[in-house]
Length: 289
Image (cartoon, rainbow, N blue to C red; front, side, top):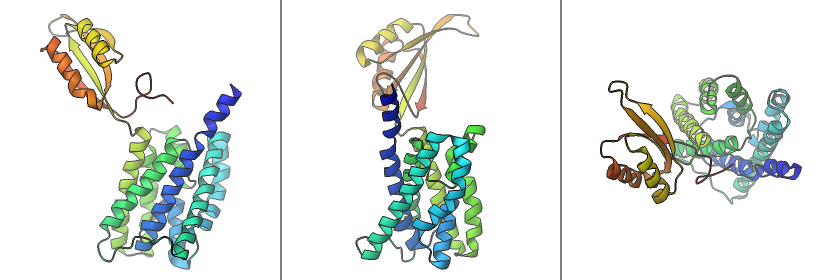
């Protein structure tokens, strides 16, 4: 059991490293060359880079040290281990990309007049990187630590908390960059927050069917044999008619959506069907964590 527990903890580290690498790439490839902004402590590091030329790799690490003490008490040892790994790897990847740019191996994307393309790709890249880090239990330090603490105490999503803090910090940045760049930065933050929530909820998407019918047993058997999906039968009663019904509940992959509709209609054309989006599915036939 101890070996399995250690393995379950260690297997989360590679995705965190991948997420921080993507995030570091987005900062140096899209944000810095176009003088856009980022939120959180990273945004402060970006401002210091614009103002006095301090390197992101060093500044982000120094700014996060005080928050390590807060996170250690609030998030626990394992969570803070992932935070230290995330913050440390972010600084390493930032330093590596700085070296590649300085050596001419990597040429950042710099827009000449229309910054919308840079903003769109920056938001998608930063959000993807942070979303992967958060999904596997890590953080890149800074506001990420505060956001993870608040999501435990209040019903906020990670993206919502980060969006609020970022708006404040980016509002201050108008003292250092043009209003136009600030407005483009808001596009970056919005897209990044949506990507974070999407990856937090689950990149996998499925459909949940709630089928109210007089032929629950037949529909359940057909789903079991033809789609090889698990089915739950629940008794129901019509409020107006008083007639006994059955509710058939089943979750299927998006590609099986039309097949399941056909199965239901062939057995009971009068069935009432409610179809809902499912962002994440754990269990037999789907995925397990």
